[in-house]
Image (tube, rainbow, N blue to C red; front, side, top):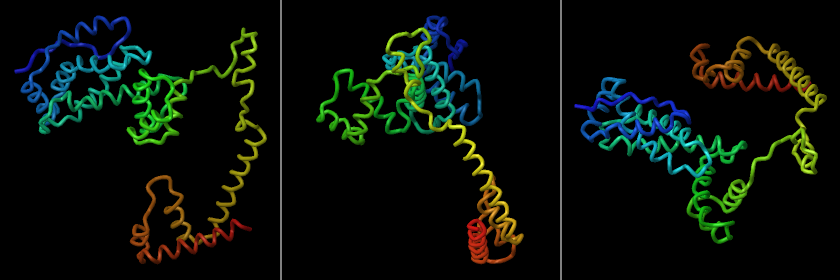
Length: 285
């Protein structure tokens, strides 16, 4: 027999945060047996009401996890919102036959969503883009709460613990200590700092109209030459090249074409090789 859980909106706003917190704390915690029965209903019968009850009963744990990320200057309500998304994903993937409690399984998903949100919003410019950089970001920021700039030995120790290079440690340390800067100067800024705005000294080498026109004309010419070269092939060779290399959807294999043309895969490979040689000669003219 499961608790009748009150309906609590998962969607949050700053204004409703206090009300949300109180309501979540009033939701009873499920016993292991109650949780298992609900999880079985969801897993075996796709019972969406069971999923709702599992989510609601674990919202308090999301709030607890989100509080540990309060030092990033981001809204607690937003962190909880992202954590709730992770909880929903975990409930969807939870297997009651694994023999573990839902929250033990869900912690990874909750933290992953919160981490992703922090990385996206902590700075205007992305500070960590790879898995290794994200691991370094969270571990390094936690370490720097107790330390200033790293000494060489401290950087070496962090690098060994996290399995990254010392260069990556120093690079991430620099990112953590940097600040976002507006690209353009403020319109009413009459001080010398206006001359230091990036718009004053950074050159956009990709926006040269002459270069853009030249590149476009070159691409058009290349497409025309390729079209003429393909037209010089016989129908079968042209079909092989197109379906093996130029098709936008699933490309054909040698065996697919061999079965269609009633020849061996080796013969298709030979025809393909001969077609490429002819194309190369045509394009070099």
